[in-house]
Image (tube, rainbow, N blue to C red):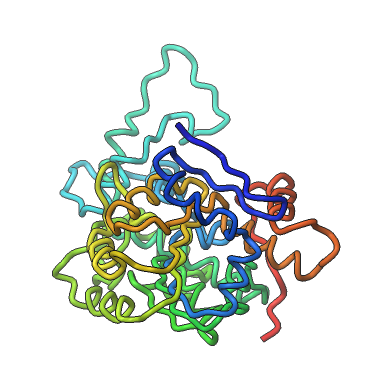
Length: 356
């Protein structure tokens, strides 16, 4: 059973299971969004950020991963006769895309008796290089447009107000370093896509790779595949990050890349468990659906100070900044969040002009 607990007039809503309620009941009176942000501004912490931190700015979720196979089926002029083995990323894009014929040809009426378009057979020919470069192009556009139009998303602007901390960035868009690198130590755990990939000229390369299965040199990105214990660079990054002594941990839009009952980011998960088992500080999980992750962490870390904050980070960050910009507009941060979420939903990128 799921309970929704309301702390007070100026507090946040927590999504908890029965098992989690007892473990944090003693501290409910102290946990409010205002207190959380006050702590983030005054104490050094560790932020672990995933795709949810870039919501509204960079593509994420199923639509992101379905992009290459959909584009391939819609725009390729010819298909190879022979299906050759594909790498793991491409195999996953094909297997989990769940594409239907109506999505390939939106708005077209398919009359009864029409020959079935063999799109499931054709998508098996999705070229490796095209699939990977398409994803990189999509991710790089956020930084490209931010530089071109001189804006910064509130979801990253808010970090400039926090105490100097460590940000373990599991995104590839490079926005954390772009906007927060002067205020915090940024570690791009899985690598980043260069901003030049977002240039319009890159579209021509994408088109060529779509038509011709041209192999490209490997890059250093861990993207859409499991981490490896043989990845020395990743282990070095994790050792450095976990060597810090944060006074709190904030996990934003990240779930250790859970895939079914397992985790693609198992190396990170094991390092995290070893570091924070019996951790005395607070671990905040800011996610629209945080319950399962919180339960796993509570069990593995053997602590009762893992707090699920059922919020979208892009909306929450904007709400906090709005309460500072317009002090008399909202009764509380919770009120601001609810108002903005009702008005804009969860996919909005709230942009501010770039002043430096």
